Amino acid sequence: MADGAKLLLWLLLLSSSPWCFCSELDVQCLETLYRSVIDSNGILQSSWTFVDNGTDGYICKFTGVECWHPDENRVLSLRLGNLGLQGPFPQGLQSCTSMIGLDLSSNIFSGPIPADIATQVPYLTSLDLSYNSFSGPIPASISNMTYLNTLNLQHNQFSSEIPWQFDSLGRLSSFNVADNLLSGFIPPSLHKFPASSFAGNQGLCGAPLDNCPTRRWRLRLHRINDESSIGAAVGFVVGFVVALYFPHWFVFSKRLHPYLFQIWSIPSGNLSANLRRT
Ligand SMILES: *[C@@H]1O[C@H](CO)[C@@H](O)[C@H](O)[C@H]1NC(C)=O
Ligand SMILES: *[C@@H]1O[C@H](CO)[C@@H](O)[C@H](O)[C@H]1NC(C)=O
Image 1: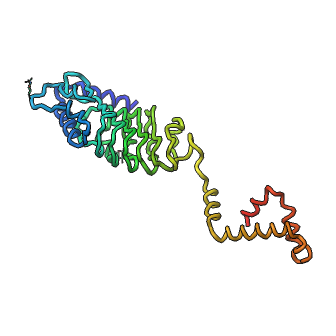
Image 2: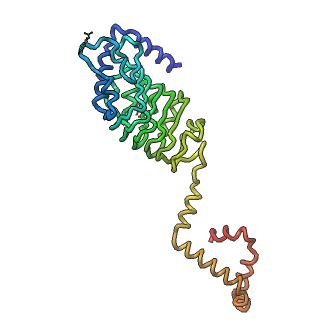
Image 3: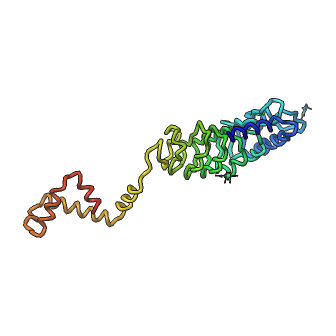
């Protein structure tokens, strides 16, 4: 309810263009972005021509730029997928003040996403950074981009955990972090997405993927890793085998009778459990 009212207010503000000086800011946004990326295929160079006498709406004809209105320099979304762009996360986006869509997919961008991305582009409903080489943690501040419907971070090199704050992204209807280097628990609010949204991350666990290893299991691994307990286990097994094949060595030693009887009486399935308990 409150969110809906906020969105309505925002749309009203947007449509009150006489007081809005966002057009110049939007041109500045594209100019800064243009200077901050490496355009090795020259696709932006051939289309993004900034002219001083530029009439209102001239940036709307640039490759990948969608405007709210064709006669107004106000960016609705940037669709810069698959243009061979390189470099760090583009700069200047905070000047595209009414942008709701950003698609940088299938380029060669690398390095971290700025931690303050939510203050740069707070109104995004769609963010697609898939198929690049972005790395570092996924910024927790993305959870403040409350209008997000689509978040696609597939096929990058993001590491660390999915921020638990993502629980507050109530509008998400499409989410993908497959093929990264993520680890840890999947936040409960993301369990509704298919396993394919999380696949290809060796350390991720919990629904919809496999359960996370329990603490007890980890403790047991520690114990087995401990050299002395391996030594003890090996010694026990050797002793057991010797007793099995050469019972007469023991049978005639009266002192060992009770122990031998114990070993024989353990059903084979319980043997390993008993081994671990010792
Ligand atoms: C704007 O400048 C360019 C050259 O930079 C010129 O070709 C074009 O005719 C000019 N447009 C207007 C509307 O004055
Ligand atoms: C979200 O925004 C608020 C207010 O600006 C800030 O205090 C908070 O730290 C932000 N959350 C994250 C996870 O960055």
